[in-house]
Amino acid sequence: MKKVCFALLLWLFVNPAVLSAQHVKIATYDTLPPFAFTNKDGELTGIYIEIVKAALARMPDYTASFNVLPWARAKQEAAAGATFAILPPYFHAHDWLTETEPKRPYIWPYSLPLFTQHDVVVCNENAAPPVDTNFPMDYQGLRFVMARGDGRAGEQFFQLAKEKKVELKLLDKAESIISFLLLARADCTIMPRSVFSWYVKQMKQSGEYQKYDRNGVNLVEATTIFRNDGYLGYSDINAEQNFPFKKDFAIKFDIEIYKMKKTGVIQQIVERFIAKDNPQ
Image 1: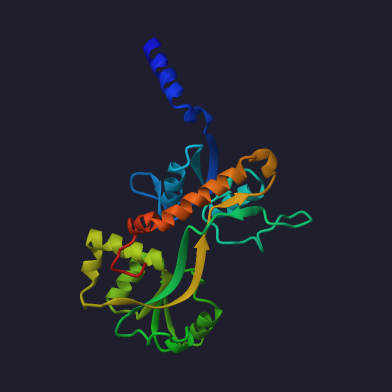
Image 2: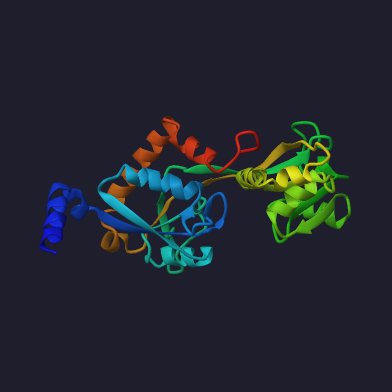
């Protein structure tokens, strides 16, 4: 026992950074692959998770843990100053405000953008409209399949569906949507580009993609309808008292994210989760 204690003390002596490293807690979700999810081994992973892990590995003054919460609860933690940061909010400094006056953003600052999410229309190549068409008006007459409860297509699209100017089928799972397209039972779908690519990759690895691709359907990205950046957002509630190191962390984190973008590290992380030969 004495030898173990001595060895531990010696290790700490030659690794003083272990004693001085500041620990931070980051609130996130685990329900949306490939962005942030729990894998089959029970490990938290995903594009945003691995980007932050890689940056932190380059920051010896800090360690971090991820606190997985429902997204609404994660926002509440940030609004209460109960967590150091939240991952990966879009930019909401204009509308995520404190309840008390004077109202101000409860998340500030935001890091450099970590990853740009694109909501895209993916279609059977034989049904896709010409490039640079107007969505959704130029998609009238086509058959769409989408996730139940997903409103990303916008009010104008759903009005067209209500008027029967586009046919709309609602399913519960992304895998079912892709299978529906491969069987040529629908012409197009709308979902985040990386989510589509991640599920295509998983289905190809399992053989499900080939099982449904009986008609030689080629799925292509028709247009992008929306773009959003994901960030690491820092709680700004009682930050001087609770997180006096926040400015130092934010600067060092952004420097590492900048370097990782320049050297292609972030793109390498992205490609671990989505297929190169599909929309990304």
